[in-house]
Image (tube, rainbow, N blue to C red; front, top):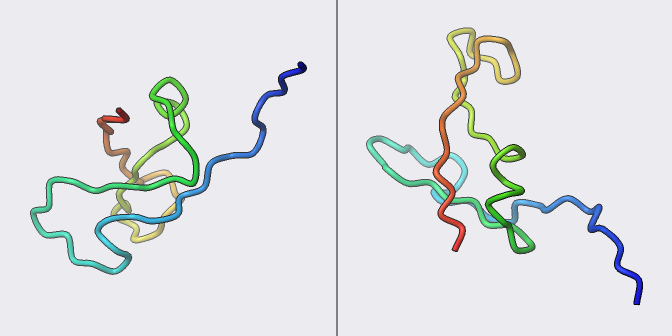
Length: 72
């Protein structure tokens, strides 16, 4: 048997709260993927960012939000 690496990236299939929801003081958000995710592979490949003062995503002033990855 020959094993080959999985080269197809996982896709987010659902998030909570839903898109457009007002978060307020919510303490938890979740992303659900189309395949199992392992902590060793998500630590460097999954990120959460807050829009920066310029109001645009993907610019130098965006703020990285630290993640906890309870993937059990």
